[in-house]
Length: 377
Image (cartoon, rainbow, N blue to C red; front, side, top):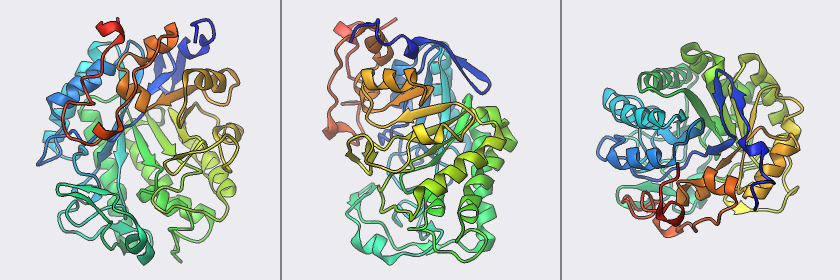
């Protein structure tokens, strides 16, 4: 692609309190490289993020655990202890040294976990669905390999405020670690998404049943995060069409239309939407899923980041057509640390190696070459 066809991606954009110089965002990517025990961000992660930082560009961190009982993936980092804060501060300082910005993505795995990951505590969800652990394929990464999710239990009404408080504390830790903002991971069948969708939420109290009730938990979490940061440095990621982790809803259009409108009152930095070309982890044709950025753009009044298998040309098109303001790239940013420069100059991309996505070493993580072996300026 010539650089004459992708100029909109390389124009400035304001997201909340931050002005970016371009619209090519590094998506959150779980890659299992934190240091165990303790899920501490270390030198390897610092090198990885530093390689991909650009002047005026945005990096969204990988999903980051908000508490020991929120964990659901071996090697995923945390953001709830002083050691986590110190580890992340080295990374944010490295990103800032290159002129970049970085948001921390706050993550609670919910029912998608295993007893070995939660310090022996039973994973929690809004409701109990035995088919989830009986019918699931091994999908939880642990120190001993891939396992099925453990049986989960429903959160007691009295426990929910404590989980919301865990998010608030994690948001405060992210601020202490030098991040520029925080993003709530509310997609992919993790805890906030489990509350949203009626396929996983069958509660009969104030957190279940109606669409407003099912949105209540997420909105309370956002309120807690904004109490630390203010709305203009808080964001939310949603996957309206995702089926990953056995997710489903009887009326996703009504659900996500309501949620997008309800989020307007916070003045968020952005809404991050996984586009319908990705349903679960399977790429679809455009238009096959019920809710996309194009529809939510009519309701949400802030900036929108679109994600979901974009290439340079499709990214430019969605921004040019106004359905999104920025585009997040995942696997291409993994295999091309200089991705914005390559897109802008129409250069070929390195292929990514799926076999090294979750292998805990530098291979397939920090060893992807810059264009012609030279570090991009």
